[in-house]
Image 1 (tube, rainbow, N blue to C red):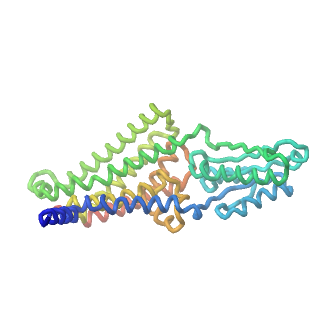
Image 2 (image 1 turned 90 degrees about the vertical axis):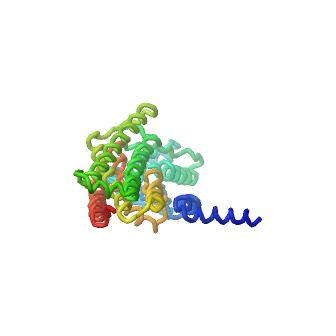
Image 3 (image 1 turned 180 degrees about the vertical axis):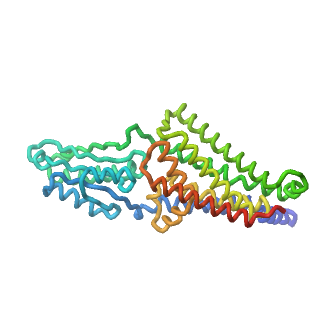
Length: 360
């Protein structure tokens, strides 16, 4: 019995010494639970802005506007169609509802009323939350003003020039994730070479040690571009996903994003001494960015207190840039802001890596 207990104790001691196993045993599921709990339990924190164009200006049309204004999760802006649709295309609104000028007359004559809703199908929050909410409100008003609940007929009209599906939104997120993984895990080979004194031996050769770093950066950069090309090709061949943007701009964004994530990986390698110590840190950086940056889940679904965290993540801006280029999605941020933030991350991480990195 003593031997049996001693073996159990030895197993626990081995687990405590292995930081990677310890992370995946305890921290990893906790991180998953917290992230998904914050996403799916934050329904009351959902906020979105919509626009309403009231062309009828009757009591019924005003009742429709007031019904939407009473929904706490919605912010309602009114105005003309051109201005509101322009704001929708900029990403400032999630939908624009057009109340036609002949609505009151059609209701009086027993004719159906067509209500148009402009939306962006690349935004999953709109398709999954906003459109069903609009339909429910309009049906409720229809039951109040007429004996026929179908007096209002909702016509959803996409602002995209091409058909949009969920897979079209997903592919840029998968590309962003692959770039992140390729960049962050560049730290492991470097730490391994430093542990085994390989970097120290390179110092005794004619080859400058900085060439090792530059060669790895170029290798990871080319690898990210090849990954992107392969994923786009497979997505088009199997799922008919169309790349509607400019290829040069796409690979430029990929290159910048890859450099940012590589610099973060080297920053980790600058102060972590062992591979076992690096793995948990890389995972702690990787998984929050994967699930909180908006590449898979809309950021509108996150609690308000997490929005500042989302705004600091480089993957938020990389994913938004890829969606704008590849599927012309409505922006979360302007492209200029995305590039500025990614450039700032690159400059800061490169500077810190140069200052903190140790060859031995």
